[in-house]
Image (tube, rainbow, N blue to C red; front, side, top):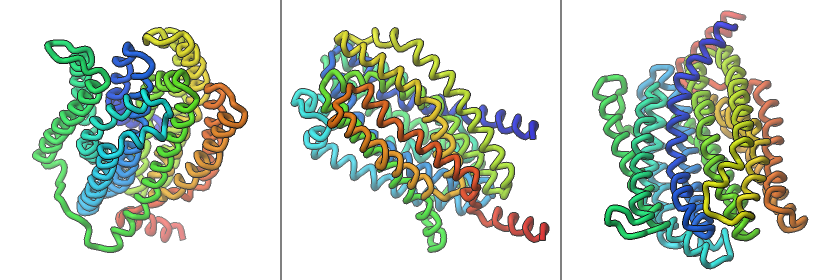
Length: 462
């Protein structure tokens, strides 16, 4: 068993490290915007923070779709069933394009109305609307990038998406410097410049990834063709996997937007301070999300190949690895919080609140990462995605939002204590996830190859 654990850890690092780097660089597009606009004051910081919150609702929805696609593609690739792989990619890409169109139309047509849900301050609404209106143009390129990244990861090509994300961040940083501050003959565009830079960077990342995909396809490693499934059984199977994830992540993202609305209505200081914690949270979750994504890929492949016990033991290895990494980052966040708050040109009160919020965040990092690995990676790998829908609904809507509203509007607590109370939902989710993991009901084989192998083993035991 120890040898098997070593193999899992080695494979996890090989897959997780490039994915973690890619996730870090993808999330850093918004982080760079926030940090480089930091010198423009609290209103600009709050504007980007709230504009990014609605954009994140789109991102988590499409990412959820990619998660469902990844579950299917990992299992079919592990079973060497190419038709299933092609069908999984095609149907999910079509759905992703539809979702991106809806969010783009809303963001371009109703930016002021949408941002008015987050804040009652006119200046913040105007700033966030400017940012969102331009950022919406990047929704379609981001959808294509995420779907092709998922495809390449599912077949083990994890470095190519990483390289594309690195190039995107370099472009974004350079364009931010030019457009925000008016360098090299460019007019000073401020928050608009940040949105333009992010949109162009995402478009370039998409183009690089498409070229990388064509290269992989040319080698013969991947035989992908556009093929929508005709068999109703496949459509049903995909639907039962995809819709709980999309609903789950949409409701989670909507919950996060309600949290942002709570913070935003506590005042500009509270909203700006919470926005300043965003880069740290994105960095930590971006790095450690590599473990969760690697978990889903590796466990999914083993389930697809009918290796049931190996999948269960691998799940335990991943949970240990996630907690270990989270504890390290909790310590680092507490240490760097005072220094990090000095980067931004904001009021002293904003800095002090930011430090306190980061300390509270550090407490919950191990719990958040455990849930990300166990719930988002392990439980979903078997395709029974309605488990996570139930868990997240209970956590976010049954615990987090009610506690947040009570803490903010009934008890009238300061923002850091509001954040602590609504974060208690993570503890509830952890308990439910552990129970479901030990019951093993999530271990579902989707491919014909795996189902045949399991039946043969059961007949042999009889």
